[in-house]
Image (cartoon, rainbow, N blue to C red; front, top):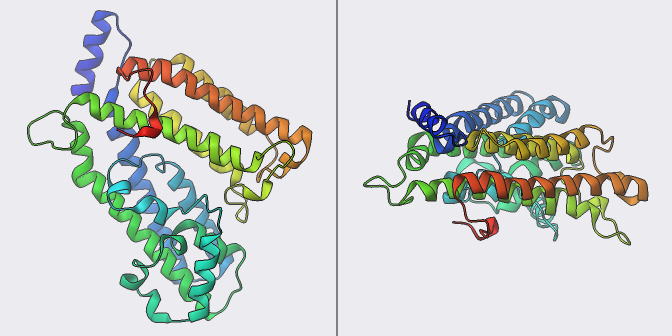
Length: 324
């Protein structure tokens, strides 16, 4: 009701429609975290039923897909509970995840894999990227089977925690920004800024890490640095992240034609790129295609800063990387 009344008032005044925080929460964030919790619960169930890699891989892929729908929404439970890195420890330039996994396997201690004990492990050995190693590159033996089940159960627990945190507290903090008793967001503008920050930071992460890391430099391309190579997800992660970020932008400002057109161009370029793990960056022609995609992501940032940020009242000089 609040959103509908706002839309009517803006229409009467001849101003752009701003769905703003309520629609971003109810139509984007809450369904996204519910889907992530459901997907990781299914992943856990699959691992407990049959820990063989081929049996778990489809549920793993679905859970990673669901994570891309919410990975940009770091304000709130993901940040408060320190869940972001525990769910997805990447980039990992020092190879800490692989080292931590080797240490854990070398000890072979099943007591370290109980739910309470595993939740205390380093973030480098938890989450989607450790599970990727277990399902796509590590040997299949009894301890690895137990470890696969431990990581899957831990992921499901973290997703449930994030989902509950949004449903049972953080969503209301965003929706009641500026009202008495809300100590986190002292004005509606602060809540809008938090979500706009999530949008811009998500775009920066795709530009800098998902695309920038494998591109490296012209003289030294680094295709081995692409995200989720073992599971073949590098390009898919870019596509799903951009799709989710487009959803957030539209939820915040439905009347944002330049931003939506920029997203659509980048998504079309990604759809036409036959390079699932960015191996082509080592070849000049293949590199050019990824560079064009990266430039298209930068164009989204420019459009969103002016159009979405401007409509929401976020200062044009605001740097999303600085946080709230």
